[in-house]
Amino acid sequence: MRRMTTRGFWVGTALLAATAIASLFPVPVGAANQAGAVYAWFDDDAGQLGNGLVGPQYDSPTPIPSQMPAGTTSVAVAAGQSHSLAVTSTGAVYAFGFNGSGQLGNGTTTNSVVPVQTTLPAGVTVSAVAAGWDDSLALTSTGSVYAWGMNKYGELGDGTLKQRLLPVLVHFPAGVTIVAIAAGEFHSLAVSSTGVVYAWGANTYGQLGNGTTVNSALPVQVLLKSGVVATAVGAGDSHSLVVTSTGAVYTWGKNTFGQLGNGSTKNSAVPVLAHLPAGVVAVGVAAGGASPTAKVQEGDYGLAVTSTGAVFAWGFGGEAELGNGGTQSSKVPVLTQLPAGVTATAVGAGPNYAHALTAAGDVYYWGAKSNGSNQLLVPAPTPLPSGLHASAVSAGPDGEQILAIFVS
Image (cartoon, rainbow, N blue to C red; front, side, top):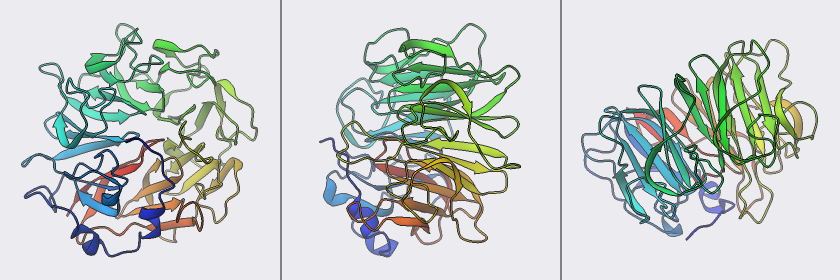
């Protein structure tokens, strides 16, 4: 079953004790309370929590352990719409949840409620993953990118529109080495070792940033200004973000709610500068999205984490996605109201909620609550399992779940 919820269950009960919630779920021996354990929370309608259970009755407002194979240590995670990815310390990829388009990459279209290994080519080791609506990306240790799953708009970047049940190589120009990736709803982004950004897939709103609105099944170069060097990227449903080596943020694509952060609501097929306050240096970005199956407006918005650990947000704010104490949208970045003394190191954006990983290993969230009402207007801490701290966290622009890697 596919669905987009307003997450009334998880946030409406989010302050329940983590121990009480954990007692409802099986805990695989050796998988929990260890460094590199994967935990997941929120929706479980397709098994995307990876704990052996499936159905809305198993949704969880607090982190519960996924059943990664005994002895594995995870180093990276990514959340798609209803599927999840994890990278191990040996460079293997495991996937779980919905698999109707082959986004688990194991050669089938059968959903899995526990992690299954993605069938990568022999000798390929992965360092990072990204997950779109129904597709998946993996960055390898040699700087190549593999993709699998849905390919309706060319989001796999292999020059075709053919669905792939197994990973295929993304076709970058010869000699290009990739260092960072991001997956939006139906488009994908990558940063090269020289700071060039490539994009492929859907381009209805100019989210590929190449000056057109024509889809591309092969990577095209984003038209950043001469001298701009990219270091990180973020992809929403129909807009894109990049952080530069100077800490600036450029955006492009759909801009209905000001999600480009440049003071306007005009779409842009080329990068424009987000209006961060003077002196603010961004180090990371994330972008939310609005599901095509959503019954209410959700999250066309952007986030940036700064070198000082602050978070800025812009775009749609009707579900309190901006975390600044209100539900107004903003065409320019506004300061998210993290508690005094809390330092963010990374941010993530779901369709109507956002989260931040802190230097202390805590996870703060804000946004939709209780069937679309009584939103969390400012960030609140996620109740974590006793003694655990997060080292990485992920939620995709359409993700119904959050994933985290925990260390004791």
